[in-house]
Length: 464
Image 1 (spheres, rainbow, N blue to C red):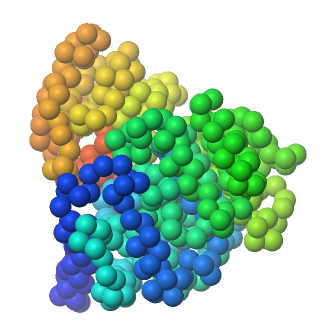
Image 2 (image 1 turned 60 degrees about the vertical axis):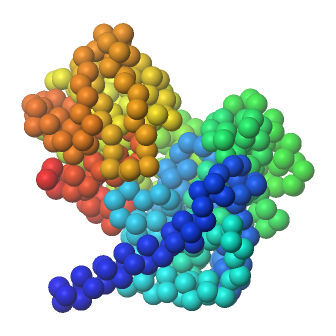
């Protein structure tokens, strides 16, 4: 059995390597530029057609935006699952295990199914006549695999997280009847820009000819106007947090809290744990989106009531160890860091607080440091295992200006181990930074990622 498992794992690795081969065969210079000029998502559509158009026989929801796509996707899938539906979930990137990208009811696709699906898509891809400067997007290939698996498993609804854009995004080729928009920031200007308006236009590509409704988180005024005009032209039913619906967070007993979403005269509610309570707005958006799904499927038009207290958001404000308390989160700019501050104020740590940060050159390191400085006793600056990220900037001076001592340890594994070994049981360690680093921390703490529910994705088994 051990030999078979090893062979299967090797097959998984081979298939993952194949997924990136089409992309890497094209010279980097041919892949550089705005997405509208260099990306060809129509090849993903070609593949979906070639394998029998699995997406067209299912009910799908696409999630786009700049911040919180993965969180909203997981929350929407979780709400629908708690309502008794069989739910497929596609997210990207993964944190520890590549198979985290494809789930049904929170559980990752089995190795054998992943290999079988990859072989099926690989076989179909051989018939494509790709020009020398075009390629199959890796995420698109996995989205096709996910669509096939969801159809096989007879899911009721599927949630697909898009990449940085939508209009020229591979995953957006999956036919979807619903859309969920998270906050849109002026990000990826070198790929989606050059202006913020261009970024919004790319994101709004999530509204296709098949899309009937869209639910959006609160947007900046510049974005809200553009969204309203676009939705009006497309004649899509739209609901915007702050304009069309609201929410409130009510404290309960034993640490449980309840998020209420007030929309169209209906009050939806979700019981959440302390970590999810920090994402009350996200929960409210997901409740309203789930309501649209139920109405579309003619399941129910009544108020939604669900208990999400067992849900874990991988690498998002997640406590992975106690004594000392270790929190991991993908905080890469000041907005994310404010969530960490909110958590610190809620738990009121008694010992010292150390933030171990991994912030590449393209992240808002100064914003993160400035936001956390009033609350931490020390910063440790490190890197990650991702060789493609650049860490050339020295932030020790920024920490000094904020009156906080700091240290530099480039080796991420050494940095994590030293911080953990130096901490007392009453202390708190904040492991914050880019997603590659979040994955490193989860791996080092041996946090299981196969399930999004209960003990399947709770605290780690210990630093190793």
